[in-house]
Length: 119
Length: 303
Image (cartoon, rainbow over all chains, first blue to last red; front, side, top):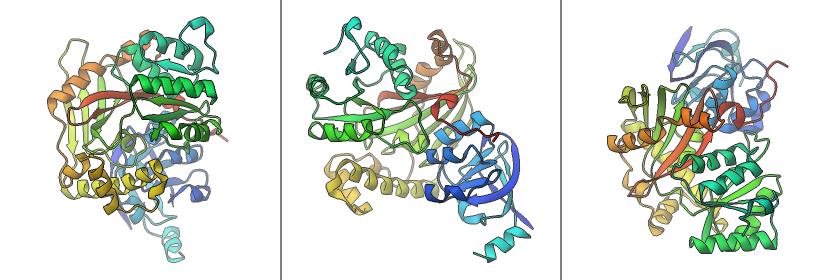
Protein backbone atom coordinates (compact mmCIF):
# COMPACT_ATOMS: atom_id res chain seq x y z
CA UNK A 1 0.00 0.00 0.00
CA UNK A 2 1.16 3.54 -0.68
CA UNK A 3 -0.10 7.09 -0.75
CA UNK A 4 1.24 10.27 -2.27
CA UNK A 5 1.91 13.71 -0.89
CA UNK A 6 2.43 16.66 -3.20
CA UNK A 7 4.67 19.61 -2.51
CA UNK A 8 6.93 21.96 -4.39
CA UNK A 9 9.86 20.52 -6.29
CA UNK A 10 12.82 22.16 -4.58
CA UNK A 11 15.98 20.21 -5.37
CA UNK A 12 16.05 17.71 -8.24
CA UNK A 13 16.70 14.01 -7.96
CA UNK A 14 14.84 10.89 -6.80
CA UNK A 15 15.69 9.20 -3.51
CA UNK A 16 14.14 6.27 -1.66
CA UNK A 17 14.85 5.75 2.02
CA UNK A 18 13.60 5.62 5.59
CA UNK A 19 11.71 8.72 6.76
CA UNK A 20 12.83 10.25 10.02
CA UNK A 21 10.55 12.89 11.54
CA UNK A 22 12.69 15.65 13.05
CA UNK A 23 10.85 17.99 15.38
CA UNK A 24 13.77 20.05 16.68
CA UNK A 25 17.53 20.08 16.91
CA UNK A 26 17.50 17.89 20.00
CA UNK A 27 16.40 14.87 18.00
CA UNK A 28 18.54 15.45 14.90
CA UNK A 29 20.80 12.68 16.19
CA UNK A 30 18.05 10.17 15.35
CA UNK A 31 18.68 10.64 11.65
CA UNK A 32 21.10 8.02 10.41
CA UNK A 33 23.12 8.25 7.24
CA UNK A 34 20.94 7.85 4.17
CA UNK A 35 17.63 8.50 5.92
CA UNK A 36 15.20 11.18 4.76
CA UNK A 37 14.81 14.23 7.01
CA UNK A 38 11.11 15.14 7.36
CA UNK A 39 10.34 18.37 9.19
CA UNK A 40 7.61 20.95 9.69
CA UNK A 41 9.68 23.99 8.67
CA UNK A 42 12.60 24.43 6.30
CA UNK A 43 14.71 25.69 9.19
CA UNK A 44 18.40 26.41 8.52
CA UNK A 45 19.16 24.22 11.54
CA UNK A 46 18.38 21.25 9.30
CA UNK A 47 21.54 22.12 7.36
CA UNK A 48 23.26 20.29 10.24
CA UNK A 49 21.91 16.96 8.92
CA UNK A 50 22.69 17.55 5.26
CA UNK A 51 25.99 15.73 5.66
CA UNK A 52 24.03 12.48 6.05
CA UNK A 53 20.44 13.01 4.85
CA UNK A 54 19.46 11.24 1.64
CA UNK A 55 16.68 13.75 0.97
CA UNK A 56 14.62 16.44 2.69
CA UNK A 57 10.84 16.92 2.95
CA UNK A 58 9.15 19.84 4.75
CA UNK A 59 5.60 21.01 5.43
CA UNK A 60 6.35 24.68 4.81
CA UNK A 61 9.13 26.75 3.27
CA UNK A 62 10.20 27.88 -0.17
CA UNK A 63 12.70 26.82 -2.79
CA UNK A 64 14.89 29.84 -1.99
CA UNK A 65 15.15 29.18 1.76
CA UNK A 66 18.70 28.76 3.09
CA UNK A 67 18.13 25.05 3.70
CA UNK A 68 16.95 24.31 0.19
CA UNK A 69 19.52 26.48 -1.53
CA UNK A 70 22.27 24.56 0.27
CA UNK A 71 20.58 21.17 -0.36
CA UNK A 72 20.42 21.99 -4.06
CA UNK A 73 24.08 22.91 -4.04
CA UNK A 74 24.90 19.53 -2.48
CA UNK A 75 22.63 17.58 -4.83
CA UNK A 76 20.29 16.45 -2.02
CA UNK A 77 16.73 15.98 -3.38
CA UNK A 78 14.13 18.10 -1.59
CA UNK A 79 10.39 18.69 -1.61
CA UNK A 80 8.96 21.61 0.37
CA UNK A 81 5.54 23.14 1.09
CA UNK A 82 3.73 19.81 1.40
CA UNK A 83 1.50 21.32 4.14
CA UNK A 84 1.42 18.22 6.35
CA UNK A 85 4.05 15.63 5.39
CA UNK A 86 5.52 15.57 8.89
CA UNK A 87 2.10 14.64 10.29
CA UNK A 88 1.13 12.14 7.59
CA UNK A 89 4.39 10.24 7.13
CA UNK A 90 4.96 7.64 9.85
CA UNK A 91 8.42 7.79 11.40
CA UNK A 92 10.38 4.91 9.88
CA UNK A 93 8.23 4.61 6.75
CA UNK A 94 9.91 3.92 3.43
CA UNK A 95 9.35 6.93 1.21
CA UNK A 96 10.39 7.98 -2.26
CA UNK A 97 11.17 11.66 -2.69
CA UNK A 98 11.05 13.07 -6.19
CA UNK A 99 12.64 16.50 -5.95
CA UNK A 100 12.05 17.12 -9.64
CA UNK A 101 8.26 16.74 -9.53
CA UNK A 102 7.51 17.53 -5.87
CA UNK A 103 5.96 14.10 -5.31
CA UNK A 104 6.55 12.06 -2.13
CA UNK A 105 5.37 8.45 -2.19
CA UNK A 106 4.86 6.82 1.19
CA UNK A 107 4.91 3.00 1.57
CA UNK A 108 2.75 1.92 4.46
CA UNK A 109 3.57 -1.76 4.57
CA UNK A 110 6.09 -3.90 6.46
CA UNK A 111 8.66 -2.20 8.64
CA UNK A 112 6.99 1.17 8.50
CA UNK A 113 3.70 -0.18 9.77
CA UNK A 114 5.47 -2.03 12.57
CA UNK A 115 7.33 1.17 13.44
CA UNK A 116 4.09 3.09 13.73
CA UNK A 117 2.38 0.46 15.85
CA UNK A 118 5.43 0.29 18.07
CA UNK A 119 5.35 3.99 18.96
CA UNK B 1 35.74 58.01 13.19
CA UNK B 2 37.95 55.71 11.13
CA UNK B 3 37.88 56.85 7.57
CA UNK B 4 41.43 57.05 6.28
CA UNK B 5 42.30 53.79 4.56
CA UNK B 6 45.85 53.71 5.91
CA UNK B 7 44.72 53.86 9.54
CA UNK B 8 42.13 51.14 9.33
CA UNK B 9 42.63 47.88 11.11
CA UNK B 10 40.30 44.98 11.62
CA UNK B 11 39.84 45.87 15.29
CA UNK B 12 38.39 49.30 14.44
CA UNK B 13 34.71 50.02 13.92
CA UNK B 14 34.08 50.88 10.27
CA UNK B 15 31.16 53.04 9.21
CA UNK B 16 29.61 52.04 5.89
CA UNK B 17 27.66 54.86 4.28
CA UNK B 18 28.96 54.91 0.70
CA UNK B 19 30.57 52.80 -1.98
CA UNK B 20 34.14 53.79 -1.05
CA UNK B 21 33.62 52.71 2.57
CA UNK B 22 32.09 49.46 1.34
CA UNK B 23 35.23 48.74 -0.65
CA UNK B 24 37.39 49.34 2.42
CA UNK B 25 35.08 47.16 4.49
CA UNK B 26 35.41 44.41 1.90
CA UNK B 27 39.20 44.57 2.10
CA UNK B 28 39.07 44.23 5.87
CA UNK B 29 36.20 41.82 6.39
CA UNK B 30 35.62 40.21 3.00
CA UNK B 31 35.91 36.69 4.41
CA UNK B 32 32.60 37.13 6.23
CA UNK B 33 30.14 36.11 3.52
CA UNK B 34 26.95 37.70 4.82
CA UNK B 35 28.74 40.94 5.62
CA UNK B 36 30.52 40.91 2.26
CA UNK B 37 27.19 40.52 0.50
CA UNK B 38 25.79 43.62 2.27
CA UNK B 39 28.92 45.53 1.23
CA UNK B 40 28.41 44.27 -2.32
CA UNK B 41 24.92 45.77 -2.31
CA UNK B 42 26.54 49.13 -1.55
CA UNK B 43 29.13 48.60 -4.27
CA UNK B 44 26.39 47.71 -6.75
CA UNK B 45 24.45 50.87 -5.89
CA UNK B 46 21.36 48.97 -4.69
CA UNK B 47 19.29 50.57 -1.91
CA UNK B 48 20.52 49.21 1.40
CA UNK B 49 21.03 50.51 4.93
CA UNK B 50 23.91 52.49 6.36
CA UNK B 51 25.73 50.72 9.14
CA UNK B 52 28.80 50.27 11.28
CA UNK B 53 30.89 47.11 11.47
CA UNK B 54 31.75 46.16 15.06
CA UNK B 55 34.54 43.56 15.27
CA UNK B 56 35.04 44.02 19.05
CA UNK B 57 33.65 46.10 21.92
CA UNK B 58 35.55 48.87 23.68
CA UNK B 59 34.95 52.40 24.90
CA UNK B 60 36.31 53.78 21.61
CA UNK B 61 34.07 51.58 19.51
CA UNK B 62 31.06 52.38 21.72
CA UNK B 63 31.75 56.09 21.09
CA UNK B 64 31.95 55.53 17.34
CA UNK B 65 28.67 53.61 17.40
CA UNK B 66 26.96 56.41 19.38
CA UNK B 67 28.31 58.95 16.90
CA UNK B 68 26.94 56.88 14.03
CA UNK B 69 23.53 56.65 15.72
CA UNK B 70 23.49 60.39 16.44
CA UNK B 71 24.16 61.13 12.78
CA UNK B 72 21.09 59.20 11.61
CA UNK B 73 19.61 60.17 14.18
CA UNK B 74 18.47 56.97 15.94
CA UNK B 75 17.82 55.76 19.46
CA UNK B 76 18.09 52.10 18.44
CA UNK B 77 20.03 50.16 15.82
CA UNK B 78 19.32 46.97 13.88
CA UNK B 79 21.72 44.24 14.98
CA UNK B 80 23.01 41.70 12.47
CA UNK B 81 25.93 39.31 12.81
CA UNK B 82 28.12 36.95 10.84
CA UNK B 83 30.70 34.26 11.41
CA UNK B 84 33.66 32.94 9.44
CA UNK B 85 32.32 29.41 9.89
CA UNK B 86 28.56 29.75 9.83
CA UNK B 87 26.54 26.72 10.91
CA UNK B 88 22.87 26.07 10.40
CA UNK B 89 22.14 26.65 14.08
CA UNK B 90 23.59 30.15 14.15
CA UNK B 91 22.17 32.63 16.62
CA UNK B 92 19.54 34.63 14.71
CA UNK B 93 19.73 38.41 14.84
CA UNK B 94 17.62 41.17 13.31
CA UNK B 95 16.54 42.74 16.62
CA UNK B 96 16.22 46.48 17.10
CA UNK B 97 18.42 47.26 20.09
CA UNK B 98 18.24 50.47 22.14
CA UNK B 99 21.55 52.34 22.34
CA UNK B 100 21.67 51.79 26.09
CA UNK B 101 21.52 48.03 25.61
CA UNK B 102 23.99 47.75 22.75
CA UNK B 103 27.00 46.81 24.86
CA UNK B 104 25.28 43.73 26.29
CA UNK B 105 23.68 42.78 22.97
CA UNK B 106 26.87 43.17 20.93
CA UNK B 107 29.02 41.33 23.48
CA UNK B 108 26.57 38.41 23.42
CA UNK B 109 27.41 37.88 19.75
CA UNK B 110 31.07 38.90 19.89
CA UNK B 111 31.76 36.43 22.71
CA UNK B 112 30.58 33.67 20.39
CA UNK B 113 33.34 34.66 17.98
CA UNK B 114 30.92 36.45 15.70
CA UNK B 115 31.23 39.83 14.06
CA UNK B 116 28.44 42.38 14.53
CA UNK B 117 27.17 44.98 12.12
CA UNK B 118 24.70 47.58 13.29
CA UNK B 119 22.36 49.14 10.75
CA UNK B 120 19.95 52.06 10.59
CA UNK B 121 16.82 51.04 12.49
CA UNK B 122 14.12 49.34 10.45
CA UNK B 123 11.49 47.19 12.09
CA UNK B 124 10.77 43.69 10.76
CA UNK B 125 7.15 44.28 11.70
CA UNK B 126 6.84 46.98 9.06
CA UNK B 127 7.57 45.13 5.80
CA UNK B 128 4.92 45.51 3.11
CA UNK B 129 6.44 42.74 1.00
CA UNK B 130 9.61 40.70 1.37
CA UNK B 131 11.14 38.93 -1.57
CA UNK B 132 13.83 36.44 -2.42
CA UNK B 133 15.01 36.51 -6.02
CA UNK B 134 16.94 33.41 -7.03
CA UNK B 135 19.20 33.17 -10.06
CA UNK B 136 20.68 29.97 -11.44
CA UNK B 137 21.25 31.36 -14.91
CA UNK B 138 21.62 34.92 -16.18
CA UNK B 139 18.38 34.66 -18.16
CA UNK B 140 15.84 33.33 -15.68
CA UNK B 141 14.88 33.88 -12.06
CA UNK B 142 12.54 32.55 -9.39
CA UNK B 143 10.83 35.07 -7.12
CA UNK B 144 9.30 34.13 -3.75
CA UNK B 145 7.25 36.69 -1.84
CA UNK B 146 5.60 37.01 1.56
CA UNK B 147 3.06 39.71 2.18
CA UNK B 148 2.30 42.58 4.55
CA UNK B 149 3.60 42.20 8.10
CA UNK B 150 5.82 39.21 7.29
CA UNK B 151 9.58 39.66 6.88
CA UNK B 152 12.53 38.40 4.86
CA UNK B 153 13.49 35.87 7.54
CA UNK B 154 10.21 34.03 6.95
CA UNK B 155 11.51 33.17 3.48
CA UNK B 156 15.17 32.69 4.34
CA UNK B 157 14.64 30.62 7.49
CA UNK B 158 11.79 28.63 5.96
CA UNK B 159 9.28 29.76 8.61
CA UNK B 160 6.60 30.35 5.98
CA UNK B 161 5.77 29.03 2.55
CA UNK B 162 5.88 31.87 0.03
CA UNK B 163 2.57 33.64 -0.47
CA UNK B 164 3.37 34.22 -4.09
CA UNK B 165 5.82 32.42 -6.33
CA UNK B 166 6.85 33.41 -9.82
CA UNK B 167 9.13 31.95 -12.44
CA UNK B 168 10.45 34.68 -14.70
CA UNK B 169 12.19 34.52 -18.04
CA UNK B 170 14.47 37.55 -18.16
CA UNK B 171 15.84 37.13 -21.66
CA UNK B 172 18.84 39.11 -22.78
CA UNK B 173 19.61 42.63 -21.47
CA UNK B 174 17.11 44.98 -23.07
CA UNK B 175 14.48 42.28 -23.61
CA UNK B 176 11.12 42.41 -21.85
CA UNK B 177 10.84 39.86 -19.05
CA UNK B 178 7.85 37.55 -18.89
CA UNK B 179 6.29 35.45 -16.17
CA UNK B 180 6.36 31.77 -17.14
CA UNK B 181 4.79 30.37 -13.97
CA UNK B 182 2.96 31.81 -11.00
CA UNK B 183 1.14 30.62 -7.91
CA UNK B 184 -0.57 32.63 -5.17
CA UNK B 185 -1.58 31.35 -1.75
CA UNK B 186 -5.31 30.98 -1.17
CA UNK B 187 -7.73 31.40 1.75
CA UNK B 188 -7.18 28.72 4.38
CA UNK B 189 -3.49 28.32 3.68
CA UNK B 190 -2.93 32.06 4.02
CA UNK B 191 -4.89 32.13 7.26
CA UNK B 192 -2.67 29.34 8.67
CA UNK B 193 0.41 31.23 7.56
CA UNK B 194 -0.93 34.40 9.18
CA UNK B 195 -1.53 32.62 12.51
CA UNK B 196 1.98 31.16 12.42
CA UNK B 197 3.42 34.59 11.73
CA UNK B 198 1.58 36.10 14.70
CA UNK B 199 3.00 33.37 16.93
CA UNK B 200 6.47 34.18 15.59
CA UNK B 201 5.86 37.90 16.13
CA UNK B 202 5.11 37.21 19.81
CA UNK B 203 8.46 35.42 20.11
CA UNK B 204 10.32 38.19 18.26
CA UNK B 205 8.81 40.88 20.50
CA UNK B 206 10.03 38.92 23.52
CA UNK B 207 13.52 38.84 22.00
CA UNK B 208 13.53 42.61 21.68
CA UNK B 209 12.02 43.26 25.10
CA UNK B 210 12.83 40.61 27.69
CA UNK B 211 10.37 42.21 30.12
CA UNK B 212 7.55 40.87 27.92
CA UNK B 213 8.28 37.22 28.67
CA UNK B 214 5.36 34.87 28.02
CA UNK B 215 3.63 37.08 25.48
CA UNK B 216 0.64 35.37 23.86
CA UNK B 217 -0.68 36.08 20.38
CA UNK B 218 -3.44 38.39 21.62
CA UNK B 219 -0.89 40.46 23.49
CA UNK B 220 1.28 40.46 20.36
CA UNK B 221 -1.65 41.93 18.41
CA UNK B 222 -2.04 44.66 21.02
CA UNK B 223 1.72 45.34 20.91
CA UNK B 224 1.62 45.73 17.11
CA UNK B 225 -1.31 48.18 17.42
CA UNK B 226 0.33 50.15 20.20
CA UNK B 227 3.61 50.47 18.30
CA UNK B 228 1.83 51.35 15.05
CA UNK B 229 2.74 48.34 12.97
CA UNK B 230 -0.65 47.69 11.37
CA UNK B 231 0.36 45.80 8.21
CA UNK B 232 -0.08 42.25 9.51
CA UNK B 233 -3.32 43.05 11.30
CA UNK B 234 -4.77 44.76 8.22
CA UNK B 235 -4.18 41.64 6.10
CA UNK B 236 -5.62 38.92 8.27
CA UNK B 237 -7.82 37.14 5.74
CA UNK B 238 -6.25 37.45 2.33
CA UNK B 239 -2.86 37.95 0.73
CA UNK B 240 -2.83 40.94 -1.64
CA UNK B 241 -0.58 39.98 -4.58
CA UNK B 242 2.33 42.32 -5.16
CA UNK B 243 1.41 45.01 -7.70
CA UNK B 244 3.01 44.31 -11.07
CA UNK B 245 4.59 47.77 -11.14
CA UNK B 246 6.50 47.05 -7.94
CA UNK B 247 7.63 43.67 -9.24
CA UNK B 248 8.71 45.34 -12.47
CA UNK B 249 10.82 47.86 -10.56
CA UNK B 250 12.53 45.11 -8.55
CA UNK B 251 13.28 43.02 -11.61
CA UNK B 252 14.67 46.10 -13.34
CA UNK B 253 17.08 46.48 -10.41
CA UNK B 254 18.05 42.82 -10.18
CA UNK B 255 17.92 41.30 -13.67
CA UNK B 256 21.51 42.07 -14.56
CA UNK B 257 22.93 41.11 -11.15
CA UNK B 258 24.64 37.93 -12.42
CA UNK B 259 26.68 40.02 -14.87
CA UNK B 260 27.29 42.90 -12.45
CA UNK B 261 28.43 40.56 -9.69
CA UNK B 262 30.76 38.78 -12.09
CA UNK B 263 32.29 42.15 -12.99
CA UNK B 264 33.17 42.54 -9.27
CA UNK B 265 34.83 39.14 -9.19
CA UNK B 266 31.77 37.41 -7.71
CA UNK B 267 31.07 34.69 -10.23
CA UNK B 268 28.74 32.09 -8.76
CA UNK B 269 26.64 29.45 -10.47
CA UNK B 270 23.62 30.32 -8.32
CA UNK B 271 22.64 32.93 -5.76
CA UNK B 272 19.65 34.44 -3.98
CA UNK B 273 19.21 38.15 -3.25
CA UNK B 274 16.90 39.17 -0.41
CA UNK B 275 14.99 42.44 -0.05
CA UNK B 276 11.97 44.05 1.57
CA UNK B 277 9.63 46.86 0.63
CA UNK B 278 9.28 48.77 3.87
CA UNK B 279 6.24 50.58 5.20
CA UNK B 280 3.19 51.73 3.34
CA UNK B 281 5.37 53.66 0.89
CA UNK B 282 7.18 50.41 0.02
CA UNK B 283 10.73 51.76 0.17
CA UNK B 284 13.05 48.99 -1.09
CA UNK B 285 15.87 47.78 1.14
CA UNK B 286 18.17 44.98 0.01
CA UNK B 287 19.43 42.76 2.83
CA UNK B 288 21.99 40.34 1.48
CA UNK B 289 23.03 37.85 -1.15
CA UNK B 290 23.32 34.13 -0.41
CA UNK B 291 25.66 31.86 -2.32
CA UNK B 292 24.85 28.16 -1.69
CA UNK B 293 28.48 27.07 -1.54
CA UNK B 294 29.46 29.81 0.89
CA UNK B 295 26.51 29.99 3.27
CA UNK B 296 27.26 27.25 5.78
CA UNK B 297 29.99 24.89 6.86
CA UNK B 298 28.77 21.39 5.95
CA UNK B 299 30.19 18.07 7.08
CA UNK B 300 31.61 15.70 4.48
CA UNK B 301 28.76 13.70 2.85
CA UNK B 302 31.17 10.99 1.70
CA UNK B 303 32.25 9.83 5.15
